[in-house]
Length: 137
Image (cartoon, rainbow, N blue to C red; front, side, top):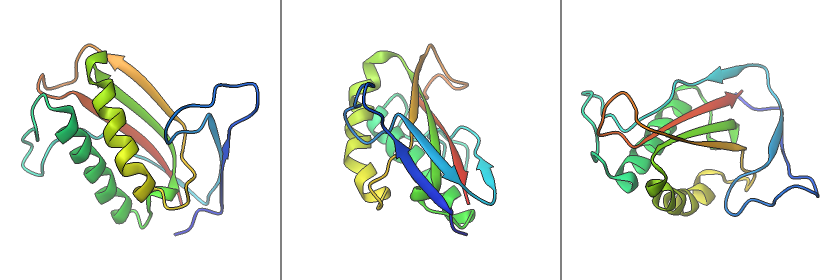
């Protein structure tokens, strides 16, 4: 499956975000896949890297990669991210992992917009990160 068109929207007059993110994205696809928020759970339901943002960020991105492959898509098919972080103290570590991994994941160098939200908790107290994506195919 191929996304027909995907382009970042980063107009003059708006903040140029540091790191791999765009202000907006225009996408044309045959269909869109709305993915449930991914957390750092293994196939057995156990929390991976409890309370550890670095380990959880890597596991969440791995889970997203598994979903993309199952959908016949890749990272360049992602048109939107929503990231939920438990407490602002984890933001720096999350950004470091994202800045490390995103250039290899997004081979086109075009990054989707990402809404980042701080929350007080997720459905298991050991979890510190949840990411929701929308995929265009």
